[in-house]
Amino acid sequence: MGGLGLPAGSCDTHMHVYDSSYPASSRATLFPPDATIEQYVTVQQQVGCERVVVVQPSTYGLDNSCQLAALATLGDRGRGVMVIDADTSAAEIERLHGLGVRGARFHMLPGGAVGWDNLVPVAEAIAGYGWHIQLQMNGLELADRRRELRDLPVDVVVDHVGRFMPPAGTEHPGFVALLSLLEAGNCWVKLSAPYESSPDGAPNFDAIGELVDTLVDQYPDRMLWATNWPHPGQAEPPGPADLLRLLLRWLPTTALRQQVLVTNPARLYGFTEPRHAPETGNSRA
Image (cartoon, rainbow, N blue to C red; front, side, top):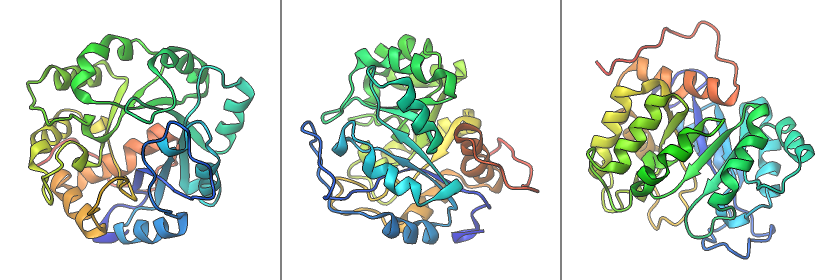
């Protein structure tokens, strides 16, 4: 077990590595300082996670080499989500799969490398490998994309509690659309980066608290958790203790932590679930 007794096999499903020796994309809008995989591992140990998903940040566009170098150091404890487009060859997808990549990222905000027109062809190209689409967008627009996302031949992982900007309530059409996607059975949500939707809400980020509670109550088997280390763009990023405090607020029971931190990522990313894991449950009580 790790920090504060997180269950064995707990997974941080979203972090980035930055290295200024790798060229930034010409479309990039965010240029964080260097953040190495070695620095991350220290944070990972403090948080208490054993597994991690390395996610290609928008800074590097379609050049995944920086994240792949980090992923190569992790062995079977790591998986990757990289950026590809409709022109990416089947041979390249197969190569990435062999390196531990299990998803294709779409960052539909300024600086993103791949547009909506690539969504369907990429989904069709990765479906045979069991990959998913990882999607970051303004959740306020989810209602307009609900049918398109629902009809994809792969699962969709929605970043950062939907990233509703500005914050939205549970009755907003975008959040209702998110619940509809979860109900359809091909959607997951990352409980992460609350500052993206609740910029003035530290340490509790109450502006999205009701959204998180609704998601966890109704769809615990579709929730994931992540640090979003090194918190790009944040002048005062949360530390490991802050992350753990919020994790325990969002996932207050042992059963929920087992489900969200271990069982769900094992299923989505292809990790082996630890032996003799306790029974999971859906109740917050």
